[in-house]
Amino acid sequence: MSDRTVADLVCSVCSREFPASADEPWRCSCGAPLELAAGDGLPGDPPRNPDRDTGLWTFSDLVSTPREVTLGEGWTPLVEARGWDCSFKLEYVFPTGSFKDRGAATTLSRAAALGVERVVEDSSGNAGAAIATYAARAGIDAEIYVPAGVKESKLAAIERAGARPLRVEGSRADVTEACVEAVDGANAWYASHAWNPAFFDGTQTVAFEVCAQRDWNPPDAFVSPLGHGTLFLGAYRGFRALFEVGWIDRVPTLLGAQAAGYAPIAETLHGEGEGRNELADGIQITKPVRERQILAAIEATGGDAIALSEEAVRTELDRLHRDGFYTEPTCAVAPAALSLYRERGVIDPDDDVVVALTGSGLKG
Image (tube, rainbow, N blue to C red; front, side, top):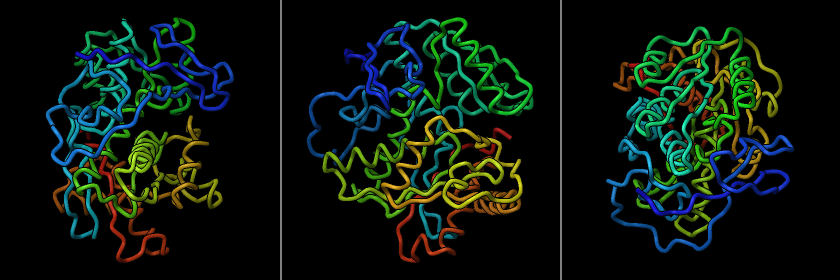
């Protein structure tokens, strides 16, 4: 579908370079995450009437990955949320019901362009369903490592796409460890939503769309759930890219919403909290791969991260459903955080805010 060259990889810490190939490493020998090597040239003026039929690749000058695998994802609605005095970006309106399709499209596009035959991923559910679905679209075999207690609706999405789910007892970190052992042992291509830089090439497009939908006027703040940071960091990279090429005049404040008891970023910033939020299962990450980058994004934008209790999320979820936003529980951390950020004065009453709703309630 594309004649674009597949980008090489470069270490985010030591700057070591790795050529693009089906045998490329999933992390640097120093242990740090890899990034896509920067391309040459700068885009022209921002499109005033973008061609939405090309989805994420509407902004092809800013997306490094060739367009090889797509299900028409992208351009999710940006709607007024009067009861919250903000706009909601409906990221649950995607082929598999979550924002993870942004990253899955670009990750499997890279895999297809490199001639990869089998991918492996670990996930609490949404990323696994997305990778499995886009792997099916690409004709690539997939194995998805999931927690033993994964929701049946998400497990079904993985299985029906023809991928092989592998249940792992223990914590979410145990799932990742089992997957990494399998990747290293079989020299498989790791389609990780946390490690693979192609995933962030897709999630950055949320920022492109938000600004295009607002006639290139960025919001004052962007609020999203925060686990591994795939949407949070993607949004930061997207807004920063638009600012660097002159399409917007500022980068919004990035504000994260974590689950109590699984909130390493919030604890780094504010100290250890209390309680455990078991309801927001999609962000129960205690050791995010890109923690250093998340903290840098918060510092660069004057942002923050806070932890939400299970009670606050349950109350907010009911409110969302009553107002017609049928999301899964993890989504509710973001609008719940919006209220707390306003109470604490982090967001001013007249600030223009966009909140991401990330996964569909149809997933259970």
